[in-house]
Length: 85
Length: 257
Image 1 (cartoon, chains in turn brown, green):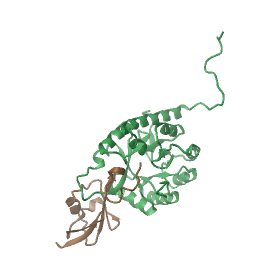
Image 2: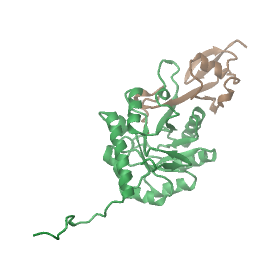
Image 3: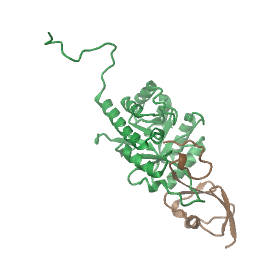
Image 4: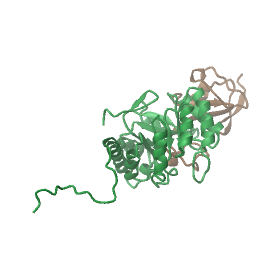
């Protein structure tokens, strides 16, 4: 159960603690659970399942939120995208 | 103007100026500009959270979702799949079913891919989204979007960020006459007179980002836009005089020597 798992979070491959839930992951990354969307292997999770959803080796996780864009863009690969209203 | 409310899909909006939140120098500037604009709808993009630097502030710390309607967009999406995926993410992250749907067709012009737009809108409406589509100034496409259930349409005035103003006023007028839903002129506004003109033509609202954020003084421009939209709306409701080629005296002839 406590073996490490290798998962990709927002494009970044890293080792994490085995058996961890999405809520654990968000806590460790210091991301507040409100106003984020979490997608695991292209499936969007219901916010109410964050605490139960256990991550597995090889999972691809995307944690998304709202931004203004332009010079304030967050995350990789977004700086070249023209954003507007 | 307080009784002149804009209603879309049963929601009431106080302001007929909607603003984007991109391209500002700081969140503080974004906040001040939005306040000066008087807008109650602000658009945001959906992107990955920065997981390596959590010190970065969050836009929503500056724009209170209780005070403003947060309208997520699908900016940067070039395919139906991406636009649908980002819309679903926005709904999962947010509090409402509203989405400003963009399916971009081309990087250079950022013109909408209207075929893709209709397809994505159809999927999202079936899933219960309130789809506000960013579209071309094409009345036929606008009618199709309304037919499939869009409660408003958002035609462009000119390419995104171009500041060219209304490039095809006649198409926009035909579009406004062709649909029964609110029309929000979106993209291409350069300065206050462009916004006023859009409202004088009969637009129900104007959405802009670059014209404010890119101005030398964004906060002053935001205020200018507020008055421009008001003035344009009032002029539209007041009913302008017809244009004539020759003069008509406005002072009486009687009593002259």
